[in-house]
Length: 514
Image 1 (cartoon, helix red, strand yellow):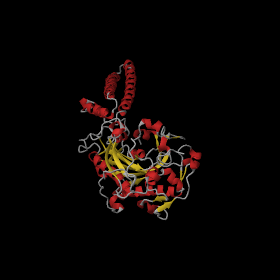
Image 2 (cartoon, rainbow, N blue to C red):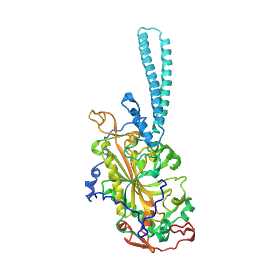
Image 3 (cartoon, helix red, strand yellow):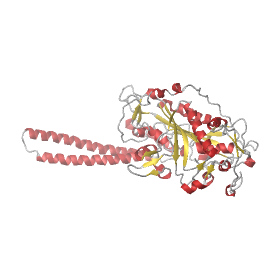
Image 4 (cartoon, one colour):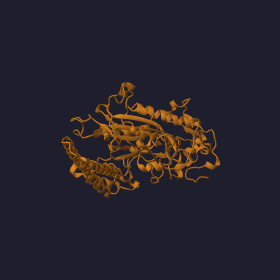
């Protein structure tokens, strides 16, 4: 999440933002699971699908930097300008590539000399002549060759590290700016009927869940420190309802539910997370063996799930509904977002993750943000979809939409969803390839092709619960959204307040904390 400009409060009558109503997305029919999920008839990857060893790769195709290899370095420079990122790094990569190529060529030439000397040695031995001088020469050449190969390897590491600092190609439709105040609102939506919240009596989400006896921060902070929390009673049931509803929602759209491991080894995490995330975001797990990192999102393990695999065209798209507990340091985040459940170190999230054919990725991008929109429409939460400016894109994203929902207490939109098309930027690093191995009819005319990868939040449940609490509050309690009721014991329509607020957290809209 990023800071946004404060949005002027909407109508005082219904406390909802003015709206350009977004068109309804077509709903999927509830076909049976076998029809929607044909992969349940067998495995996603047949047992005989070939695996290939990991090779040193970068996230942009290195050939794209080199004109004589058919590349277009100016296209990369232009993308860097769009990102407001250094352009000169492109020329640095080209220079490093040339230096590495020359060093590797020198090693190859020495190898040719060794072969020639070996032939001479063979002739000497055949003629029963002394070959000690040639054996010494061969030994010296072998040492020179190894030194050159080691030098080339070191230069390749430097080359790849430099190339990895360059972001994905920015899509032409992305607004160009390095100021997020210039994010473009694509569309807005609000429910036809107003919800329960009124400006003059709006409480913050953490007050509401406290009054429902659904939240205990004081004892949790005693256990874990800042931003610790326990969900209790209906607070827990509501959060679980969002999890169950979110998974069912995506399952009915053809996604395969997947609960991946909650931690990854460093080698795999390094292929899917940017380096700055290691210190700023990720928790390290210590113990015997290789160090591991707790995941910040199920996107991380799901993106690496098919690493070093060849995926056949008939298997695509592969659509995962990832569910996991997520862990983030959230270093340096303060202010109102630190209250309650909005920004915490541990939370649950339902994630959309798709592997697809390159030519289909923008179609899936539209479908994924539409799925998230339909989810929040079904919850009745006012929202807007925002196109993120080029300077705020992470390296992997070619384009990103955020869905921001309306929070009545703070009188502003706040991010609930991020949807990104990463094209082949992640899959190139992870070696998730596409097509028939070494076949002339393979995509790209035999050149190695990579599947495209996309990710989109469906629901970070604790954060979504914050928004639901604020929008569905009444003076006497909380209206339970209709779609969640069947997942809660007793299927309640309304939950009355059962507790008073402690004086130290009494806050009302427009007033400071007392």
